[in-house]
Length: 320
Image (tube, rainbow, N blue to C red; front, side):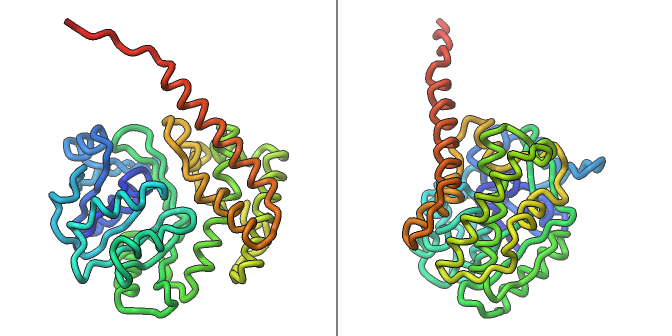
């Protein structure tokens, strides 16, 4: 199967590398020139515990160079979804399946708007990835599952094919007939750790050692559970403690949440599509979300500080 990963960051690299290792023809699409050069020159490096795998796979910043693909896996940040899909329209043919594994809420609708209905299938993954250098990724696959499904809840041939493909590649995958519940379930996991890790700067190992952090996380998750209930979303897990514990299960102590990785790079985070999505949904259904509102405000403050620090950096003098 010919596959493209749209947004080959840390997580996209784990998926792309795993699928390429299993024999799929994979193209990694990234705007990061250093990443593209490193992968093309030296291969993609996936690190799992003491194992270090070098995978020969193609990387590019130009989707037009790839041609039509059978499967397009979307893993760009949510705020980049529309722009990224527009840029990738040249590789989407009549039979292409577009699978979004992105965090947060609303990406499926954006893709539908740009491509038309029928292309998109949805999924959420608990797999982790953390970049330590361009093209070098610490992968968190062990004990982490991925769930995919049709938005309409039916089990189709294409969903079965993708699930089988992922499982052959070592990506533990199951099919859901209620993918909206899965989307909210993953949102709760992101709510539990994402923003709090970003604010404190703590990786998973240290995050779980602070009792006060634990309390804040449970309160944030509990708000989101109440919002989901008000929306009529049937959740498979409604115990905040279980969600908090599941967020860190199977990940190395040094793993950082996606929000923390973004802040460490000085990039904009996806907090608007995670905790911010809870706040907006809560406002619509009349459920107060003060903890999530506070977390969003703190992350926005850190983003503003990063922007100010970036602007304050002295510019190199021009050479003659």
